[in-house]
Image (cartoon, rainbow, N blue to C red):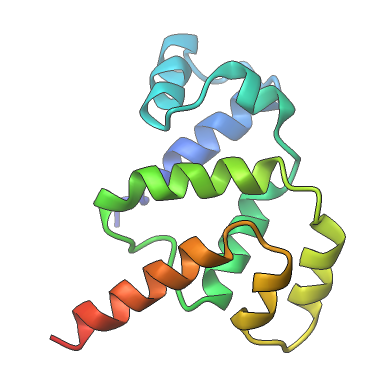
Amino acid sequence: MTEHWLARVVARLSRWRSGTPTEDPEAVARSLGELGLDPFDMRTAREGSEGDLRRMMLRFGLDPDSLPTGWLASLRDAERACAHCLEVGRCRRFFASDEGPEAARNFCPNAEIFEDMAERLRKSAGR
């Protein structure tokens, strides 16, 4: 099965951010542009934010690998917020707890986006 396109882009950007010269700089620039990011966003991003974003999405009942492609802008905004978030400690404690996604509303800048996405998916599945 083909790897999800967003996972490929994130992997490509992660390699670029770590300085591993395994990717064509033009391909990286295209990937950044597709996500509405620039090199500054990648240099200032918090390490591990991709995993935290994924875990938070799963807590809201969202499968990051099967979201509609039309949600790219929302995902880009969520990634940017997560990559620069200062609530890492609260986020990690949340992941270690059994609290529901409503508890994330107290600290996660993406909680509202994820709640909206989850609601839209539930409504579309109910058709």
